[in-house]
Image (cartoon, rainbow, N blue to C red):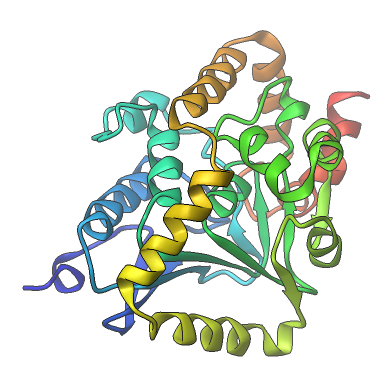
Length: 281
């Protein structure tokens, strides 16, 4: 059996559009949080892609038009994620984002809906980000938890948006719509939603048709000049989990869960805008 036939993920779906073009669709109701089961699925997929010399493009999208990836699952036991295999030896989420950023295959985040926190960090770790102009929302709200972004946003954003705007995003904790994200360089471009799927599919199909070695070599040179050394990223994770043990973080999480965090609730739709009013009454 081939890998796509054997692969039985719990919280995402793999669609083989062609031998060179795979689509990965996140599907973890109610709001697509990133928990240990989804991380396990991603690690299995990455292990296959790291040795696959046929797949040229992987598009990551969502079955939920309102949520690409809401954020990390704050109700999960971190030990469950850390017990998963880590070929890099890095913490669980860092292992995933570092490995995604180094694949020979071209990776594209097709963001229709909300991508906050670790969801934004996932998109930043992929090679390109295309956003629905009307429906995409991106942000890093960790400052509201008295924490640093743990998956490397502070290391990847400056190369995309510049130092000042990286500070604006990370220190403000606000949400950014598709138009602003495009203007800042947070995403490659924002496409009107009516033509979003067609644009992403056409672009991915075009790139999937090129020579695999050429794509891998182009990526290796761009990565050489734009990526931080891998060993930098565990520092972000250590800082986040250090903050997660402090009373300020736990108090904020409790307040947000009481208002419907990780449910299909107003707080999940407006977390970046509303977190300051909740944390700073």
